[in-house]
Image 1 (tube, one colour):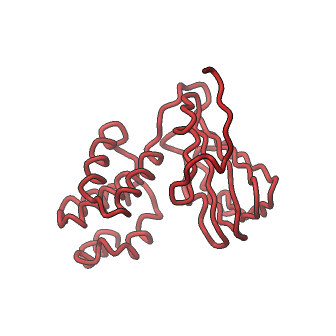
Image 2 (tube, helix red, strand yellow):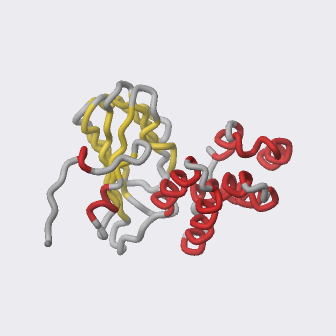
Length: 205
């Protein structure tokens, strides 16, 4: 079959993420949807330097507050935000319950390849379920193709710490922090690092 018809509600939700690209088998571009309640972060603070992606965000329902390079964007339902600069920092937070943001991204002129962040969300699911060995195994596999993806490195660090492989955890965390400035505040509140809190603080100082 060369075409598919579905609905957002029919796509399984993974902790606020609807993996549309995976569910529909899209290979030409990244496409996903994020939903949540008031105060939820729907688009984590990030840039697309590693992927070179341009990104389009459409607020399907509810009301969000977006930021692009620190500039606030009021985004009620129907708002479209295009971020053409891969280096621009962006994030989105839901202001009301039932907010959903549809996203599309790809690198101009390049064949699409699966990005590490998509893998990281799958890793997070295993981690949150307590399957630390599985999460670490998948992290190690992903890092072969995505050695500089900070999200994968971060979950590898958390998984290693839960397995008491502390030297590995600190190495993964160091590599992640060198790539992404938001790693330090994430690590400060991550319980997995409590047994090595002093080393983590020294590492991120």
